[in-house]
Image (cartoon, rainbow, N blue to C red):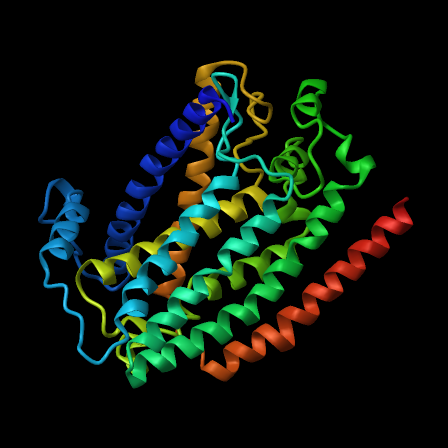
Amino acid sequence: MTLAELLISTLKIVGLISVVLPLIAYSVVAERRISAAIQDRVGPNRVGPFGLLQPLADGVKFLLKEDFTPSYVNKVYFWMAPALAMIPSFVVFAVIPFGSMLFGEKMVVADLNVGILFTFAIVSLSVYGIVLAGYASNSKYPFLGGIRSSAQMISYEIAMGMSVIPLFMLTSDPVFFSQGLSESWNQFLMGTSDLNLSRIIAYQSGSFFDWLIFKQPLAFIIFLAAAFAETNRLPFDLPESETELVAGYHTEYSSMKFALFFLGEYAAMIAASSLMVVLFLGGWSLPLWGLDQPADNVFLGLLHIIIFFSKVSLFMVFFIWIRWTLPRFRYDQLMNLGWKRFLPLSLANIIVTAIWLWFKS
């Protein structure tokens, strides 16, 4: 890698993090305000206009709280767990195309030709942080939370991974892939393999009905439900389950170590939302007024980035709305849904898609 390439990658990383971190902070504010509205409360509104400085107050509070480590914990793993829970969620953003082109550069940190495999490989690492937190706490409730989380995340990763296979079967089909794409867009993607996330966006750039949410609605439903389970969000928040496990795997944590779990959860929600936008909602493209083609000027490139994060924000609002609307599943219901419903449905979806492509050819 040359010095120029290293500088460009660094600028991409800094720019992406400068967007993701405020999005995490204000997702927490949005959650508190939306939950307050649902429950007929006011919500945070004292710190700054409309409560917009609440994330700053929360950050200062976490920094000033006593960083207490109980004497009975395994200290090495206890300190390691929060970082392991947070880092994978941020690494996922490296392969997500959050825009088309800006200043002649692709708006993706690492344009891997196995982007989706990299994503699932990294996402699966976050379970280690949660299991370590439960084990290292040397306490009954965190241990139960860690065991629940490991079983839950492993179970739903299988369904989530299988749900995207029909998407790549469609986008790898030469007849479909040749429809509705300009020659310049094809050149932009030249040399990419079937697992490249940019190719998924290109496939969906013809019209709204080319978005894969319309062609693979079952895959979208399975992926969406699995995303709730992978991020430990209601109605699948059994690893935390305050009414049963106090706070689950992070019961013994305080100060910034607890904040890292908190950041990791919301970063995972944004990463899952970004994946759903890329896979099912056309990524940064919008089939209006030529907004589905790569940018040929700075304004259009910035507009594509705004479109992408606007779609991500809609998913974040949906995550929050579901949390304060639906009750928590029982643990047996959660596991039955993953193994006895979503896994067979995802397998059936692959078979049906394969048969349809075979007949069509």
